[in-house]
Image (cartoon, rainbow, N blue to C red):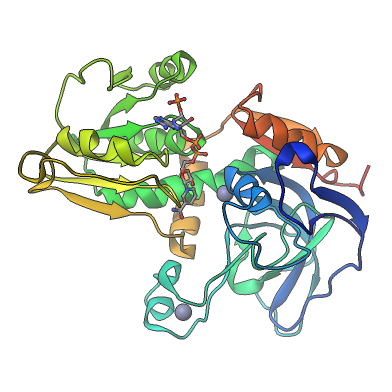
Length: 342
Ligand SMILES: NC(=O)c1ccc[n+]([C@@H]2O[C@H](COP(=O)([O-])OP(=O)(O)OC[C@H]3O[C@@H](n4cnc5c(N)ncnc54)[C@H](OP(=O)(O)O)[C@@H]3O)[C@@H](O)[C@H]2O)c1
Ligand SMILES: [Zn+2]
Ligand SMILES: [Zn+2]
């Protein structure tokens, strides 16, 4: 099969990925082989390529927003049939036996394996997914390219939203308005939660307003009209933490979504942190993933995607990194739904 592999980390612009012919993987017991249709491109892929995150496997096929069809099943697979539409997300597998795995909180498992980081992902014609962590997409009406971003920003946003514990009638702050914040805003609004978006770029401010935010602006330049019950911070900018905490009412929670952050300094504990909580999003679990896909179908969540042909992955990564995409999410088309690779 053809696969994009990364062997050595480097700047995206230096073209460290190569398109090569490799052996098509075979599913072991309790595993599915997926014929990949599309795979979304995430900022995390760029972090892996460029060395912000360590290279855990060499060579590695990146990509963790995978939509495909079951093509082969290993021994003992009982819940999926050949030809069924399935998805793979960031959570590839976990130990299945620790206290976290046994309580549905496998995102905290110390033996977690991630798709496209520990294990080969979806920038290839085929990939392997454990049956236990494959997502059935049979009930989703959207096209594969529209489903792909649901599988990372969608699920992660929903997981962050749950940590915020906002309730109907609450005011929820969102700092940054990238793909993840979009999904949080849609879920929150549907549940009767008012959204207040602070983001810098005029485009994002305008989009947040179009998407129904009660207020959108740059909170470092203008004051939000209300205190908030909860907030989610998306950019890896530690300097935003104290002002975001200051905007919360007593009892409020600030959820930090980033996987890394610049230093966080709280200068005035009594005024800004006392009485509030900070929580962090640490991977996602399959309960969040499955709950979110049901919600996404009910809410008809759809976000703009820029589709790239399979050969154009390097260009898609550059455009994502440089913020030059026409639509917020880049998706790589690997094969047609009813045909083979084009
Ligand atoms: N913890 C986990 O397990 C997990 C899983 C998935 C994703 N994530 C994280 O979720 C976050 C959201 O991802 P995303 O791709 O949707 O967002 P993103 O586009 O990377 O960032 C969101 C927005 O924040 C604003 N921003 C960026 N840098 C900023 C800064 N220094 N100061 C103020 N604003 C800044 C930008 O909008 P403006 O230019 O308009 O300000 C940007 O579009 C990422 O940090 C990602 O790592 C975490
Ligand atoms: Zn991702
Ligand atoms: Zn475990």
